[in-house]
Image 1 (spheres, one colour):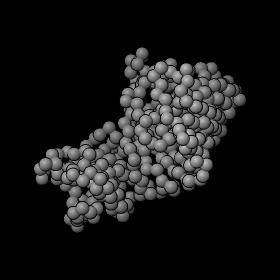
Image 2: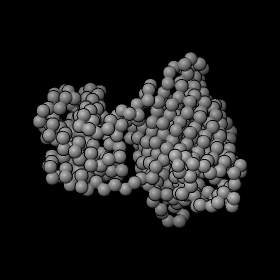
Image 3: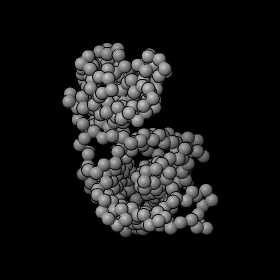
Image 4: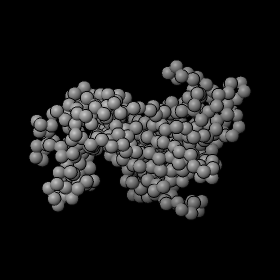
Amino acid sequence: MLFFYILIFSFPAFSQDAGVFLSALETGPYTLVKRSDWSRYDNGKYKGHVYREVRASIAPSPGPQDQGFLYQGNFLVLEETLRDLRQSAQAVDAVIPVSFRVYSDGSLQIDDDRGFPHLRGFPAFPKEKLIPSDKWTAPGSRALDPLNQGQPALIPFIAEYQYLGTELYKDVPVYRIAAKYALRYQGPSENDEENFRPPDFKVQGTHLVDILLRVSDGLLMMMRDNLDETYTWPGGVSIRFRGFTLTFGQSKIPFNPEPAIAFLKTERKDIEVNTVPEGIRLTIKDIRFAPDSDAFLPEEQPRLDSIAQTLKQIPDRTILVEGHTAAVGRPDGELELSVQRAQRMVEELTRRGLGADRFIYKGWGGAKPLGDNATNEGRRLNRRVEITILE
């Protein structure tokens, strides 16, 4: 049910009288945040509110002319909640790496397709210049996985668009485009594509979408999708989602972490610092907790002070905290403990003056070992917390 679109649009400036030509061109690195606020109904009865959030960090790179642009990055799927937790640290359900190529004709090739990005071919624009009130239609598709089972089905649709002109959004000139599409899938048919994998559900619903794009460079400023969708399964079980989804885009602003990293390397030799595709990672090895607990031992306090001081020097970046344990034959307990320890690290850092809303966290249990769990040294390496300053 979660969805994202590929942001690859650039908009040369034309006067509104002369018309606006919208062309699909590569941009620089960017981030997207999508927040959903839906009412859920199970078999017609109100179940409650559902809040979902997905964050994406994507970087494009041009290839040979016949190979389009290669986009690589990560989607962070945050834990579904029953209330809005934007001002708090949030748990991460999944970290999904993506790699996809967009060709000049708009076609898309995704390596190891796991359903991200969810929206494909949307929004789409004609080759001609547009003036306010101009309308057009274009095909698109969406990867649907209403129960978050990791088995998305790609459902096609036809979207209708209308260009409404320019206006100001937060004092920034933007183009406004209205769009709408309906999803209808009632089971396999002879019109299905050869490689189409039919889902075990039927779906019908509507989407009314407002799109605001920055005039200067075409960056998505805001997209609001008012949706109403119902899924049904064999036996008559149904789930309906009704509400809205807000999507915000932002160009990546380069940052220089070197002064902060230099400080940490000078102050602490027991924290490893590495550059990774996601950003800058601090690995705190052999972190000392009370046995089978998320409580730090007193000797860890100076190390926590140094980490907090370092992170304060790199403002305005999201920070991912990941907990890891040794694997000693209790996978469920290890996973739970790793989540608790990651959350405790967030609490300690916020207590030292960092904003809670900057943090997301995840526990891995013993699923990502650095050493051999059969040895004391290996288990020591595996008991760690990793803190990534996301690019």
